[in-house]
Length: 424
Ligand SMILES: Cc1cc2nc3c(=O)[nH]c(=O)nc-3n(C[C@H](O)[C@H](O)[C@H](O)COP(=O)(O)OP(=O)(O)OC[C@H]3O[C@@H](n4cnc5c(N)ncnc54)[C@H](O)[C@@H]3O)c2cc1C
Image (cartoon, rainbow, N blue to C red):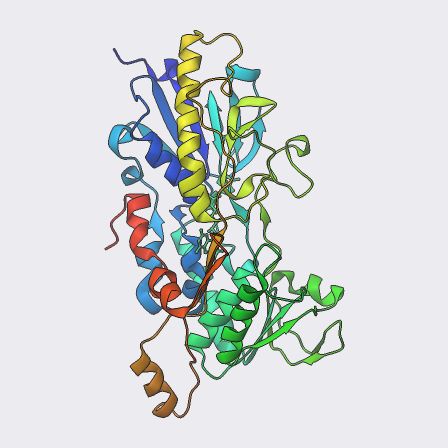
């Protein structure tokens, strides 16, 4: 017999990004809707697959807005959860923790409180302004995209500050759409990215950008006062002088650094000094065993990636949520639940580092010849990018494979599998 709604154990998932949707899809095969209810909360009205967003904000190529930005709705819940779960559009601003297994509630910006027995947090990162999409509705997201495209189209000399993946990929997209604008990328470290990656990969990416007529300045930075001005995107009236004294002409400065975990709704004692959530290998919070966290927000020595959140974290979190529910039922809702001691629990011990960084949408050889010789010598260069896999001696893959796996389509075809939505 089915329990009434108030008798059901409620699992609340906060964040319906790569991690949250993957968890939901895992749970949709295992959770018993007669006994458990699932609530999915996201600050935005639609899933925004981040790897597609830098192409989206630069141009309308491939209709990414319609093909990849999928609304949440009934279609989000499949298998056992179809018709048995609900989505709430709202930002979590605070958590009212209950006594251990008794659960608590999350408070939304609307003032609504949503009760949970088990809470899972997957709220991702706060990204630089160019891809920090609005939350209200689809119209606001579309307006934001239009405004970014206009900003890029008006500028002649674009300075990107921060040579991580966002800066590199944005430079490539800009070169695709604007073959003759000046694009400069400045990065504080001696090589692009960070020391997780081998030097040959970091210098390889730089060479690829330079081959596309993008100026790359490493080991240099803009001054602190300029940096605070550009945190919102900036149109300088005078030239920018870098720390090393280099004068840069720029009429648009775009911050591509400063990504940090989206955890401001949590008290500081649950966070590391970088704002990441401290977790146990079961993805539980040690002070709150009925709360799990995963994806970009966790304190774990690894580069934050969608592939990790989806394929290496989410299945383990799903296993642990289901096992926690079983232990809760066995205990009759009372007593301490020791998930880690259960043989059925899943523990995380890290995953392989791997990354694919695009450098624009790869075009065919014939298109490049055409652009070089027919379009007035316009230099598109060879787009594509480079990938790195931390296996064997550290495998670096070049343009062709990166183009096939990521740059050509930005993996848009995988989005309906996550969202359950079929674009029109
Ligand atoms: C340009 C770019 C390219 C990338 N390319 C790759 C790639 O090729 N491969 C790869 O593996 N990774 C890539 N990444 C990284 C990847 O996108 C992230 O690691 C991944 O999205 C993290 O998943 P997540 O579920 O933790 O967070 P997200 O996918 O960011 O989802 C977080 C969700 O939480 C919601 N949210 C946030 N705060 C709240 C709140 N307070 N209340 C309610 N909801 C909230 C957000 O709206 C969002 O939907 C790329 C990132 C960028 C920016």
